[in-house]
Length: 138
Image 1 (cartoon, helix red, strand yellow):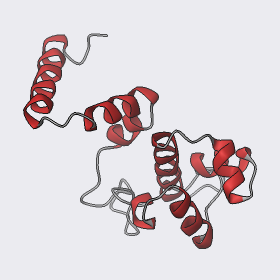
Image 2: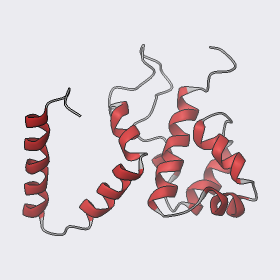
Image 3: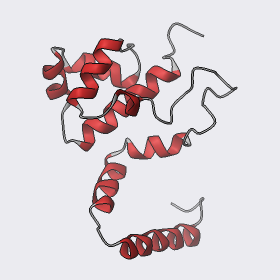
Image 4: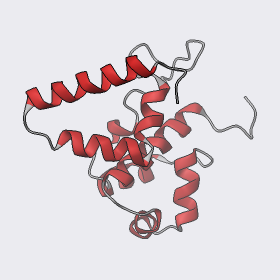
């Protein structure tokens, strides 16, 4: 592995930190202040450029109000199987989508809908729109 390329686990953990931070409406600067770091360091953690140590992971998980395991859930496993992801890993596009502002806004709004029938109707509507437009339509 090249020393320039971020480790897949570091990238994944960073993306989970970013996703959770954005879900909480927290800026990189605010997270950095809570950690005693600059926002640039938080940025490097989130991109996977810099590896996060164990004690720092614990600190981040406490600030973001999630268990440390949340930062690893669905990510690359220790045992690499060709693509670096474990058997139960979510497709990368799911994490990529949730890391966008649209993905987070949609997820936040959707989870606030209490009526399960309404949620199911929304999923069906989106699936119908997606199948009508097809993958090549934009």
